[in-house]
Length: 488
Image 1 (tube, one colour):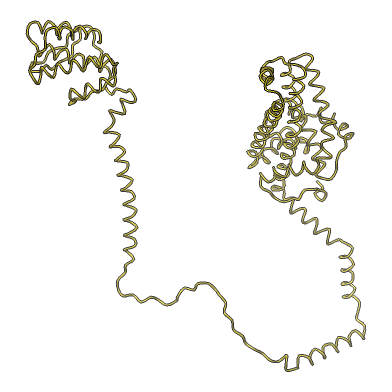
Image 2 (spheres, one colour; image 1 turned 45 degrees about the horizontal axis):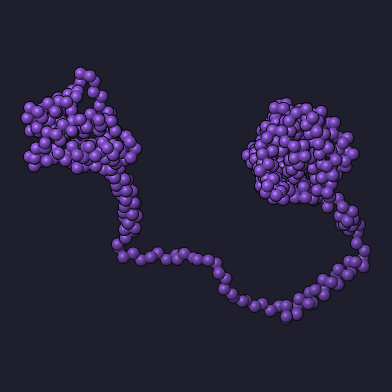
């Protein structure tokens, strides 16, 4: 590779700096590149589009043009790989090189199983410029991609978004000049598979403009990233520096000077030249013998040399207080751990204390709901009575007990059965030790309004009977038994 002819400044760069240099490369040779793009690439795209448009829907033509992007990259790289060595190919030379680019093994691979390679712009020079295939190419790719592939992938993703950004911006710019009454119909055509021919050509024009702006920049950035990676691995900057030194050493002026030095060493000096040397030595000695040259003077000046540690050993008074510093640091560390421990214990305590409210918010019941089978029975603690069993029909049993005069047992049975049914039906957690008012508040929060009001009324009559010995009327108890069946 003739590095002396390269137009870029060869030096190791960062990956993003190399990618940014691709923009500079395109800007430098834009006047020579874009005529080739418009004369070689765009005509092929237009011909493919109109051929497909005759026999297929527009989206299929657009998809095929998108699939051929690696082919456009081959043409772009053919130009940039010669432009960096100051060999600008012409349109005729590009057309002449087109068959070798299209029918190469690399082109077939780029259009098939390597089509979705996200590092395409970085890997393309390895196959196209170095001409490697098979195992040699795979080893070369693995070597060059170390510490670089991720940036090549970022490059592909970024420029893909840039291309869509340019495409959508052109569509929005077009819609800005369209009257409002036609905007809805245009959007409908965009969403439909079959659109007007003129509108289809306009959309194709926008896609070609976006492709023309982004694709050459994408290839140029990937190519410079490839050159920068080879500079890091092969030391191109050092090789180029050695070549420049070698050129300076073999220049005509250096050869002439070397010839004079050799002749001065080989040929003897003339007597006149020897006499002049002796006279010069005598004159020098006479000048140095003058008093002005024999006087010596010593001057001193301050020079800052930095802080100097004292060499004197500090006088010890017999007491060493260094342990206090260690003790203070230890105390600070222990206090820090203690504060964190108290903090976590406080969080755990709050969660434990308010666990029932958290479970209510999450609608979670710690205890599984009780399922009463047909012959099952649940123990009931009656107010002022021994243990009994909850019957299958609590309302009917409570009314029977009331009629025979066992008022406390009847109302207690009705109240306890309602509380149990509420817990089971609405997954309500009521711990032991809750008061009647707290139970009413919890039931009203979980159950419907009618059920909550009924339970509050039942609790009020139960409290009047249990604590005030106020026996309600038979009609009230009968109504409570009938309403119990409606709610539970």
